[in-house]
Length: 97
Image (cartoon, rainbow, N blue to C red):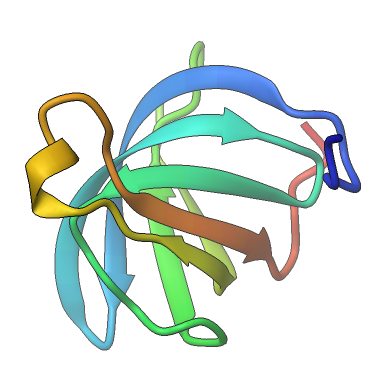
């Protein structure tokens, strides 16, 4: 049973995350109208504020989004070859597109 509030669209978009001023790399895996999931090694706490910078397909300039960490998916080290961890983000001001 899927508990998601919004339909998700699979994407693969490279991004940079800014967490407490530190830059981390990630890949957007899926997107909804209110949030996104980013595959990353960063481990911010739920509720923490994050800034995301990414270039959307067809765009010439990077887009910057503010978000809050909704959940953190941890993967045990022995499973990193088959699964990746990441963070679910709730966008503060989602763009219309």
